Image (cartoon, rainbow, N blue to C red; front, side):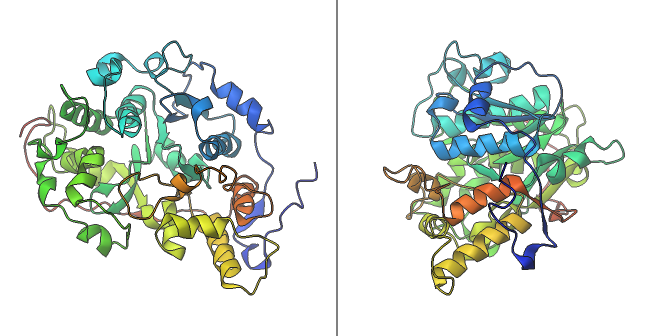
Length: 400
């Protein structure tokens, strides 16, 4: 095979990484072709994602992300990339009942520039409740396999945990990775609340004024900044809050002590939701070299055969080995029209940059290679203890 010696684990990281052969040896093309076929759901071990026009229309860097999910997690996990293409074998409505989704999604009448992300948000809760598994954004570069991130704990009969999500601070989750067992009541309430916000709507504009999430009208970026999240947003906080209204739905649910039929969502959040540090586990690049797409883009484009004493080389090396040894995944954002500097996902899609996420001879290639060939030896990730919301209510799920 000749792959064993392609890259060598640096001596200082030999205790943190071990070489493994990828579980799935198929080519990128073979894996992508298989993902265009309908696969019946046979277990709860599903990886769900969405691209509105289908996997063939996905940017190359996202395709490579998904291919590596398959390689890293192996045949015990079924990867489903859903779409909105009429007649497609992987159309979302082949896996999820239409009555779980907003009418604007079912009829294809959504408007605005974020129809793709918000369509994915609708499917997140629907897929997890209906089938179980993990729902991920296609921008996730997976570094640690799902079993070792959370599923071993969720599947353990002696464990209290039924849901897993990365947390930024307080009850503010990051929805690019959410896992749960099938039929989970917390996920169902979260999904129902979010879909209710979209009743009779075609887009997200003005959502923040809905009585159920209007508490976010006073949100600022201060809490995020105190938690060391430093995106350079060029829009007002309320614009971002509307974009992440599914996160607001989660925050609301965590406040409800009697959400539905005696279901105490606050207690469930405190005792049955496994949470982990999103900055260190999912945004390790930003935690290591700072926020902003160009910083990450340039570091990964650095040549491996460049001068090792240059600041660029040192930064790139520090970044990639930090990710490979200490991150569960690296979430690559798009954030179109939200930040002043373009996100790495946007830069990788510019003409001439289409292969920069895996270009031979660069640190990007090392990162791609390492995610499937270098396995972390650490037994656990940075789990956190859920915090009780400052305000709780004995209101029903849809009660203003």
